[in-house]
Image 1 (cartoon, rainbow, N blue to C red):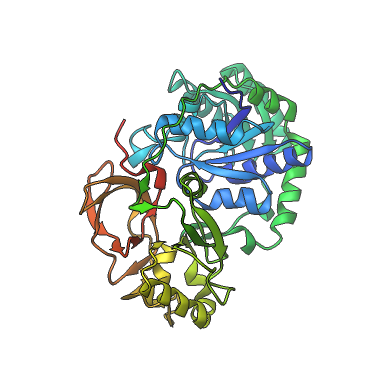
Image 2: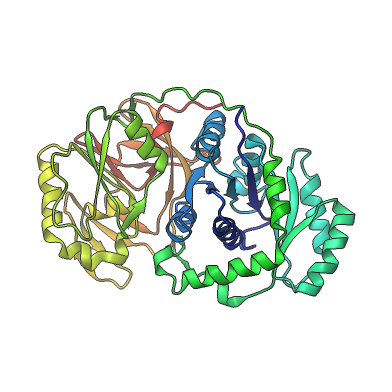
Amino acid sequence: MVTVPRILIAAPASGSGKTLITCGLMKVLKKDGLSVRGMKCGPDFIDPLFHEKVLGVKSRNIDGFLMRREQMKAALCRHGRDADITVMEGVMGYYDGIGGSSVALSTYETAAVTRTPVLLAVDCAGCGVSIVPVIRGLKSYRSDAGIAGVILNNISDGLAEKLSEVILEETDLPVVGHLPKDPALAVESRHLGLVLPGEIADLEKKLSVLAEKIRARFDLQKILEIAGNAPELRAAQETKPESAAAGMQVSGERIAIAADEAFCFLYEDNEDWLREHGAEIVYFSPLHDAHLPEKISRIILPGGYPELYCKELSGNASMREEIRTAHEAGIPIMAECGGFLYLHKTLKDMDGNVWPMAGLLDAEAYYAGKTGRFGYITLRDAETGCEMRAHEFHAYESTDPGSAFTAVKPVSGRSWQCIHKINGGLWGFPHIYYPSWNFSDQ
């Protein structure tokens, strides 16, 4: 049994303030000298980036589609066992699961599988006591809802005090904190979700202000008490993943992973998988470095925002040339989403400008104007029949997305072909979760 003090910040719907409350709470707790860990429910890369880059809090994804249930519990134990508290952030509405019509793969399911106490963040803008039946309904909708407290958002101090009494009386749930409405703390949006941490003006200042508001209005001792009372976890010993994931045999390899402002979306579990299977990882920047690392046997180009750095990537001619030379020498390349865009002959930005890229693929990448294929998929290798879990989330398209795999949506069964399988590498839009290779349904 493993003790992991933990809470999960959830909400009735998206846009209720989960991310800001999570970040502000972690900032306060870290400032108080506690060892804090973060986790994000679902496949989103950007919120963990907020946790790590801005707060200095180690953060990871926990995902019911990409991971088996035992993997979820093991990931939480491994990540949070040495911390004073792990703060998990939910996704969408608490019960909103796959397809929007099921609780499967919802934040609720993650909380139930990991037996994590939930703090429900409720947006009170434009309402008062009407929020009480919403809270009561969410608590009673499932017998194992796990809701242990409430956070009121966008509410005045006076109303929060009065409503707290009503909520406790009507639902038996304590209100552990509240926040007044403050437009100055708003975070901008973009076609792929929240902007990256480094792009938000005065973000540190905003979070410092938020942290002080939380310190003044949250019962931090009560929150720590709830987290400390979380049940111990029995995480079964993780089975050793397949020796080859996504077609890779990596033992003894020296793998170069792109990591900079343009390429920043890679699951840390993938990096762990590589190390566990004997790979050495070195990092490089297609934006800033003139040369690839020496003596490498594989290149990984993760997702990110290369479209925001077209001029810099195109202008780094020596790096583009070395990527081409490495490919011609037979070095496998794993390129997903943003990394896939970089391998194209050209990339057209949102203003219509066309920029030369690495040129490994004789195809054009372009802004489609909206998010196309979106969400979880199972990838089936057309050659071997093996399957792995992944997700897609992109507003760019390619004139040649590939056909080595079939992507299948889990609810609708809709499918399409994708990914190029070249020189032992995979190039395509899906973000692949390496430990899910040969994933069998539970």
